[in-house]
Amino acid sequence: MNSLSAAKASEPSCTTAVKYSSWRKVTSLFIDLSKLVVRFFCISIVRVVGHSGWRPPLPRSEFLLLDLHPRIITLGTAGGPRWWPAVPGQAPRQGIATAVVVGDALYLVDCGRGAGSQYARAGLALDRLRGVFLTHLHSDHTVDLPALLLFGWMTSDRRQGRPVRIIGPGDRGALPPTNANAASAVLALFPDTPTAGTTKMIEHLLRAYSADTADRMFDSLRPSPYTVFSTEDVSLPEGIGYDPNTNPSPAGMAPFEVYRDELVTVTATLVQHPPVAPAFAFRFDTAEGSVTISGDTAPCQNLITLATGTDLLLHEAIDFDWAANAYAEADEATRAATLEHHRKSHTSPAQAGALAREAGVQTLALHHLVPGDGLATAFEAAQDTFGGSVLIPDDLDVISFARRAEPALTGANVDNH
Image (cartoon, rainbow, N blue to C red):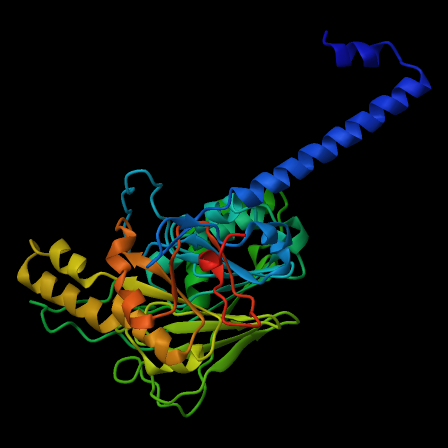
C-alpha cells in the first residue's frame, strides 16, 4: 500500500484532511494548466514558402489567447482519391478537410479521408459543430462522411433538437458528357439516381448501413441519425444561366448566402471544376475577419469575386509536372483524359498566387496538395506570383484569419516574439 493509500486508510484528522484536499486541488490545477500549455505549444508548425526555417502559427504571447481568434485548423491537406505515402520524417497527409473555428462554434468544410479522426485529434468537440459544408461531391472530399454520420450519431447525445446542418451541392441533373478519348460508350452505374446530390447521397449512405442503424435504434434505443444531422441541397440563384455541362460556373454571378448565424455569414459561388457540377467555393465572414476556401477549381473569376479582400484564402494546388510524370506509362486515352481533366479543373501554385494577388487577399495558404507526398518546394511558385505571405500548412496546423490593423501576416508568417 503506497503512502497516499495509507493516509486515506488511517482516517486523518480534519487539519490533515484539509491540507491533503488543498494539495490535491493545487496538483489538479497544475496538471490542467500543464496540459493547456503543452496543447498550445505543441501545435504543428507551418512551413512558409520563401522564408527559411520553421515558425509557429502564432507568436508565443498569443498562444493563451488563441481561443479569442477566428482561425482554421487544417485537419487534412492532401487532395486526390488515393492513399498518399509518407514523406520521410513526416506523417502522411490526410484527406482534405478544414475546421473553421469562431468563438465557441465549429464549422467543417469537406470531409476527406481521416476527417473524423483528425477532428478528434485536434481536440474539437462534436457538440460545438454547427455545420458541414461540402464544396462538391468528389470522393476525396466526402469519403469520411459515413464515419461522421455514424460515429457522430453515437457520440452526440446532446445534439438532439439542434442537428448539425450538412450543406452541399444538389443533384447534377444530367450525366456529364463522355470524354472524347473514350473508345466505347460509358453507361451510368446507377441509372435511377446517376448523379445524386447531398441529401440523396446521405440517404444512400444511411441505407447502406441499415443493419447498423436498426441495431442501434431498436436495441440501444438511439434516436434517428436525423436528430443529430440534417441535410440541405444548396439552391442556386435563379437567372444566372447555370448548366452543368455547358455553363457550370456562370460568368458575373454574385456570391450568394447559404448560411448565417450570430457568428458567421457563409456565402458561396460556383467555381470551375468540370465535369463536376455544382462545385462551390465558400467564404466565412465574421466580425473579426474572413476566410475563403476555394474547393477544387481551375482559375476562375467567380472565385476572385468571392475572395476579394479576404483575410485568408485557402486555395487548392496541383503540380502539373507531377501529373504528367505520374501518368506517363498509362495508355494514351487514359493519360490524355486525365491530364485534360487536371488542367481544366485544377490550379497550379503559380496560378493560385496570381489569383490571390488579383483578389487582394492578405494571406494565401495552399492546401488540397497534389501530390500529397510532395515537398513544399513543389509549390514555391505561388510566392513569385503572389508576392505576399504564402503558407504551405501541414495537417493539424492552426492559422488565424483575424483582421489586423496593419497588413501584418497571419498564421505562420507572424514574427515570433
